[in-house]
Image 1 (cartoon, one colour):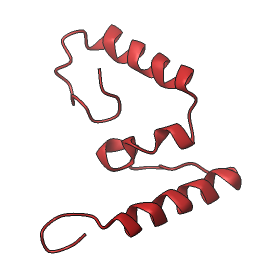
Image 2 (cartoon, rainbow, N blue to C red):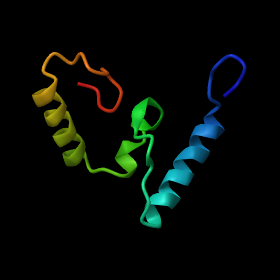
Image 3 (cartoon, helix red, strand yellow):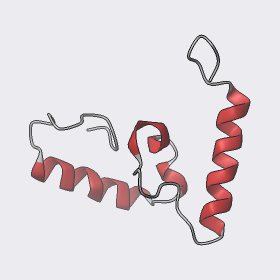
Image 4 (spheres, rainbow, N blue to C red):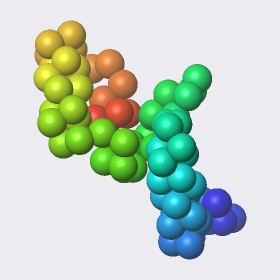
Length: 76
């Protein structure tokens, strides 16, 4: 992260390469700290569109008003 709080494009590209390598070796993009905001945009590397839609459906079932951590893992 730069002083202005922005992440350089090369750093995001490097992160995506690391995530792909982890998945190729049977790992995941997140572990004990979960997906959260920083890994959300890379979830498509690990999960199919169908799986992400299921996650959204589960979120809506348990949080129909989208008040618990809105936009943290999936956007509704």
